[in-house]
Image 1 (cartoon, rainbow, N blue to C red):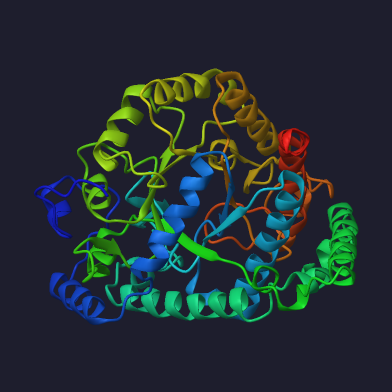
Image 2: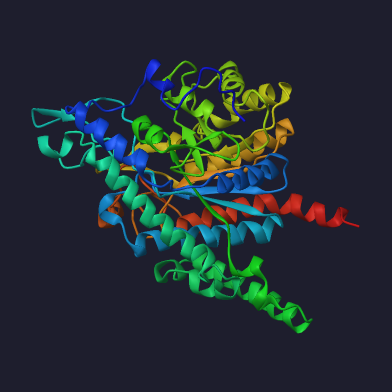
Length: 459
């Protein structure tokens, strides 16, 4: 557990807080926080403990972490279709990786709480007018009007309600039969099924169906096995809005420990990981698993200081270091971090975020990402770990199961001219279902060799 000397859920207020909005009505914010504090937790201590156990297995090289979802969730997209489509693609990717690596895949969504986004500037100017920047639906609206851009504390309560509804749907799908491996053929959306990766997944689904039939022919009741009927699914988001996180902090009566009840895992962003900052102060005292984004400016001494502050007890499964270096920097910059952390006797989960370091602007003005650069960073991430003798434990990416056109390239060869067709993101460009599967098959090919070696060594 993180050290909690002089810590309380509100002690972050004594530290410099970046990326927080300025609410014009301070009393309305206080009232919204009080209402949130009185509501039931969204996540419970036992679930948080279970995720940390799973992540401890990842840190030992016994499992793999798959973390994906929206860059920023939107209040307008609450409903079964967007949630189900994201859940379905993560299931497909997990099956691909499990089949290749012959190890458990921990499924962690960027969902049910990813409503706040950091910004490089507090304001935005358009046609001579300057307004507060859009910081995510939990804070203000995207429309460029004074009313929409004014931070509104009532949005904190709306975010809670949307998160609760999404969690309810996710739990139903994870445990209610949707994730049953006997239904693996039904997980593919029509637009993905027509792609090369969809065809490749259908071939894999055929092999899984044949394996299940073989097991049943041998007398194993696969239809009744809980491991084949349901999955564990966890949620995560960036702990950016500390008023929200504090209001949803709860104390476990059984242990006396504090936990963030808004998600199973919370993470620090590249802009909020300052060692003396408010976000580090808040996260050091809660009992959740904590992620730390490490951009191209992160130095070894920064990482070691954060590990000491957030995880002084070296708790297995407590910390996930999420490297987002950029495809052109990962080979030169990542090995030194891996070496320093290993030399310090630390064994965090190492995860690759190949999205944020590879954002560009298209010729027609769209923020986009090149799929080839995303793949290059993933390859560089695995190569760096092979060089340093450490375990590449996971993948963190922004995606949606919907048929969007936001990232260039992939097997469908999306170009600049195609971006305008279905560019729906509220913030950053996301992989669609076919590109996500293509990424999973690439990682599967990398993981397959170690898996085969394990099989050969088995008695």
